[in-house]
Length: 208
Length: 272
Image (cartoon, rainbow over all chains, first blue to last red; front, side, top):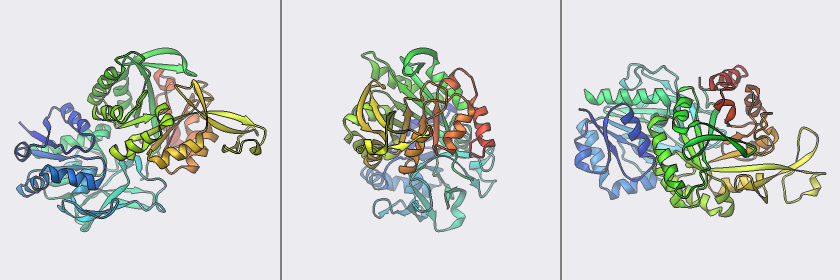
């Protein structure tokens, strides 16, 4: 039986991800128990809120080392929204803060002169850079996904970009990946049928 | 390749069932809230708004139950509003699975609630709902405390904020209040025209435009949708980011898809 752990560090809408996984009949648990997390077939790092607070909570719960272990052990790790941003080297949200540094790059604020409104709220297209990647199977290229964010990631290496999205004059990385790590800036659990398909793809990958 | 405009069905709920008022009175039953929400997800709604008008004493429990159940069947974002007064209220609803909460009367009475909510949960999940009504004046000079705009019938007006479900006038200017709410940290404004609500004659385009041009957060226009062309107008002329409607969808006068196709034909980016 495939089991997916959703990391609980008191940031954001964990329940929506939980319910989405339940909807596709996956065994899952919202947890901060390192044993449960390390023994899962796949791990989701969710998150809504501020970068600095999120890192503080992860640190307080001793989860930073656990997440590094997961990444190192080759367990599939899926970052969502703030969970994507945390995977990067550093963020410039309200200062300059170190992230988990699992993917090289930075997280920066939308330039207000290049976009109409901040945050970006709503449905936008994602252009897949590799249609053969497991995460985007059975999802049409340029499908719409639901975004809510003011900051976006800039991977140092363009090979880590799996999806691109344009907001105003800014084209940014909306799906990042590296080895067993994948991450979306949008919320698949809020992106109706294509988002549900994305979780199915992730779970299938975890099963292998 | 662009952010789309959003079409948002609004479900007024009491005891977990959907009702829709015309000018805030004469409620009619239009179905089970969770089922209707799931139906709208399947039919292409971009988001949902639930406004709870339950009056009973175990109101909060019923609402949390609705939010929990909605989350099991609805996989698009949904906002919950109606009688939320404290940070604890906000937390309970978000924890139960809502993506955003909307504040109306409580925010007018205690604007700090917006700031506190935004600080703890993020601006993106704090929506300020404003019920606005036109107050006509002879000329711009007559109302120096208010933002007066010449509307398309040639007359001048400003918009007054109403609270308690549209029953109590506050004397506050809606545009100025919208600006304040945004500065306090509200990530979106749900703007209802009390003049247009229930008429099916179209949104208050001047009101919507006045907000959209002044505020740097998304504006959800509400009140007056009766035809697909009303949506086109509110996106093009009103510059709204999202359009909310109830009875046009609940009574299947036009489907969400029909409205979206008409908007797309008019050059408005839609998720189809």
